[in-house]
Length: 501
Image (cartoon, rainbow, N blue to C red):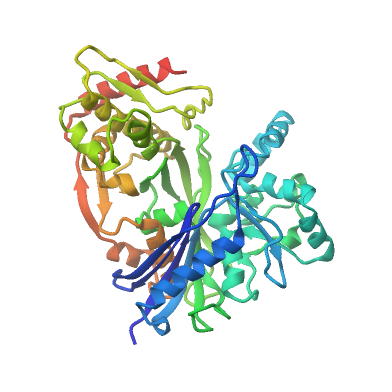
């Protein structure tokens, strides 16, 4: 019987369930949205029961098209820093999950920075003191939620990121584990020692016994039990955070290789190999994935770890949404390319999309967006092209910072996400970076990374090099301007950035 792999791609606004065969043919997929909860300004929560329903609905849908008995392994990829609380025995949620977007602990992070904890935390975790990450959310819940406090006192509290919660539900409560790409986003995981850090647990007042075991990314996490429409006994063999999953799904398995996901923002990760690279530009250092100590025998002990540098631009697709909804320049996002193609260049117009401040490598939360260089000859088309260029220049700044940190030139960039379908944007990005861009045949690379992770854990593929062989490129984009022209354009972009700071 044919062997297939099921991937659960659990995101911030919805869950995708996908079944692929080992030739990477998509056999069935289903996306299911779920509700977002905003109890107070700056607070963002998810109902874990609603997330689990979105997972099971997806499973029901895809197994109507593909016989569930053909599923040889399951992989999970997930929104990362979101933290969950549930009853260890009954699996019932004890509170709504605090989402990575939740800012309720901003004052606490500011307090810790004021007390001088940032260098200590950064050295151990590769992260910044920011409410984006899980630890201060966990600390807050342990202090403020009575049900969570009662469960802790009774010894029945389970805490983890979304991967851990889904694993518990899939295995009927048997498995309580995570892996390093997710653990490394909590502010509680030591990058060098590859385990929960006692000093960090003490700082954030988190008892280690409520946290999951940390296994390799490609491992035997458990088997299904009592899941609707799935036979018992299907192994869960891969779990990985969503952005690292996209890096794996793009087959960026060698040091210096990078991917950019063009979503609402732009998320960039660069593989730094087995070396922990400390950024000089306040980029994040994170775990990409971790091998088993002995992959052939399936030992669930962490062996070689691959690390990555991570940076994000706050505004990518959201910039184009602003042109549509804020300025009414287009009716649909897919009209942007045709509008921008009406002119050969932006005519000296620059759009710096700092609508919510500037991220890496500037880190200026007070910067605001600007549209400069306008003349009487400027048109909607020039502004549209400037918007595409502004997104590409932002990504270029981040990738140049990564190159500087790694001490290695970027040879190519693999791209994915909704906006990568915009051929003009991809060409502009290639011109800005002066390197090749590769757009894959299957652009849902986050889901594909979960397929690869499960396949590695199940020995469908026995090495990362085998993944590289099955990954397929749909189109390449090569620079069409000279390095000198690219350098001059970058100089003018930097002038535009200086004007908004």
